[in-house]
Image (cartoon, rainbow, N blue to C red; front, top):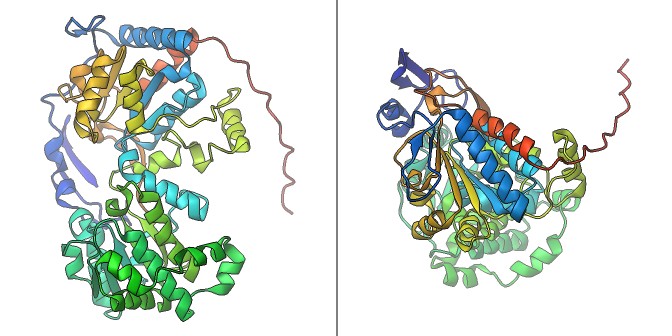
Length: 494
């Protein structure tokens, strides 16, 4: 996106024609983004209250952050590091995410840091890790033009990802033989373009994917050499899907057996098969199972690791992927390191210069606010998100915030549902004022440059977190420095 500014005000935006993700195209939200650059209602200076019966009053940054550091340090000293928590956002830049993650896990020593991305992308994270070993979609948008079969499940990109859907339409027009399968209980705009619409009953996605795999195995449309060389556990999976014949699954899914067979044939015999999915699979109590069952189709047929093929989850926030890359969830570590792996934890601890990072996963988004309401978590720091409005059970979140001993809200706008509960309000810069990077669904990193200055005393999110961390470090008990292992220098090549 190219931003046009007049002094300190954004007056217009347009798509960047040279950017390889969108080639200048914008959806309706992007095309009208300049209308959100309103100075009215912005949080302009820190505000603090020392008693819930009081109104917040304006304070300077030193007073605000010193008070926050005092409160957090006292709570950690009395109740331990897991008595504090951070709830952050897929709207943050990657650098913001990283600093908050290091603050919680490296300085305080708690994995109680989670994000609103938990509500949409955690099933994809778990599905990728369970099947491919890493949370890293092995696809790019360029694959859309190269796929011979495209399977869309639990997503309506014609409505929710319209820029991407234009590329699907172009690919279909350029290659009419390309088969498009859409799995959705509803007849969506995306389904209108499909060669095959599988209008399954809600919640039967796993049964459908198991049945497709049953057909692939029965008809010999699997890549046995690939399975032998690159996978494990396939025989156990074959036993699991044996009963999922097309006829059996068709009764569960509410579709015709012949359509299941047709979908499996198109997917299994295509030179290159690509799948796209989004919240219809992810936002489910069985979301990880749905992700894994779909990815199994790619592993069984070898449909990944080459142009036009692979399992491709679509993210719904501007930087959900960037947050995942730097470990911005309660069960992740930076750089796709595994929190459960002692060697990975030691690697991150050495990088950060701390003795260790905690091994036990922290509270996830819903669990976090439940723990706040119980009094298990005493202080919570919320940045760039509005959980009192957007969490699944907003009434519970409001009860939790009212019960918390200390609530910090770091926000660009002064009057959100969540700021009403803030004991400390910290003004943050907004999208057109920030400098850093974001990562999109295909893991392409985009550089973000500030177009206008932040208003009033607003600061960048990472700067606020880093300044707070320096103050908190002086108040926490000193932790022994780790023993650094020096690697032998590599012999330069001839």
